[in-house]
Length: 329
Image (cartoon, rainbow, N blue to C red; front, side, top):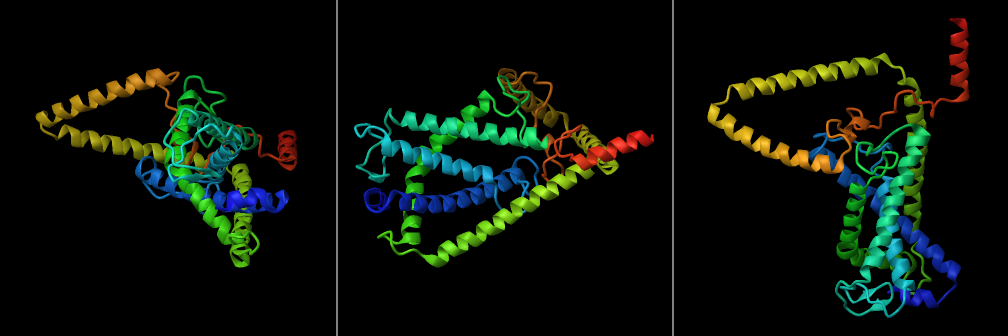
């Protein structure tokens, strides 16, 4: 594998640059994989239709890319530099320069906890940037017990712990193999023969990615300004509420037409589910009567919604226009 040879041959700067390029490939893979998972999740569980889950136009979610890189980086750094007598999970017999097949050990917790902390910090700072910078909540934990600014909370911290456990035991060895194969393909097994065209096309894809990022942020800023006091948004929300009420009434009519035996069985099943849901809600939520459904942070097309009264995206020119209009009045 590349690691044993690369750590001891060639310059450190050359190795770092090669590892950085390979991590860029992994970041892109994570962005696109996360995008696919989010699209399927919203199609099946939340929006029940195909929507773009991110604020960019292309098929990528940077948060997932950073998450994959962070978990891989912690595994790489800790396995390589922690004491050699510490034995880590190594099902394929070769992992980051350590040889020998090993099952789960107590030392694995060190890496898993570090990955969990990294994911929590990633979620916190990413959420903070959007909440403070753009006045947009891509997710909202404000109704969860122990939350911090509605961005992170203990319940989802446990989710990140579960993600770290799953990644470490189910994905990390294969990600390492994939990283090694990509590294060898890009630079040759000797580390001297770079695959120019592969690196070139990665650069092209990143060029498209960066253009998409800049363009999406600019469009997002303009839309946020235009829809801040838009009457269309108000009309849309009114019509949406009317349609929801009609759908609710139609379901009630259908339920009333059912035989009493089916109603009784259905009511008993619903009561059991409500009881369990109520117990879970009281355990983790501040006020179970107030939903903190993340869908409230998105419009019908799955795009982020700017919070009311937001001044984050209002520039100096708009502020001047508002001042002049106030003076005229």
